[in-house]
Length: 212
Image (cartoon, rainbow, N blue to C red):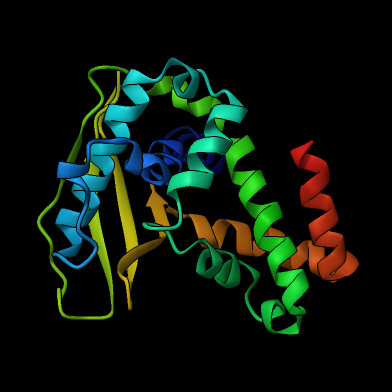
């Protein structure tokens, strides 16, 4: 698979998990994922609820930005450490940013991900399913990777890996790998190039312009 095809696959199916996991709270309370439990079960429960929401809400499936934004605003914080995602994507430049710039960068990056992936939600249908692969890591570690396959309406299943860190609130997802493309690494290169050209404020401005 060439680089262009890999990136297209990444953009199409990362939405199922990156945005989907941000919407798990819309499911019924009795099946709420337990961030204090085993990491693979936590991801499975979260992803299954996400898929259930995506299948039932036509606005989300259609990639409606208002619906996606509302869902992310309400449900992303309990399950995803998005500040860590942004910090790692910015790399060494994060330490050079002021607290205000860090907040602005995280907000701009969030908008970029939503706009980039919202259209891909239409790929989810009633037959889309997630299956966890056997967990090979140490569940007592503070940082783990769990793996899954996501079935598609057509074609072979897509492999998706999730990197989780342990926080005082339990597990939180902060990175995803689809078809050998890690989200953070993919954006780190782009962030670095833009910051070298125009600084942190330039990166924030560029992201916000793309989000319009």
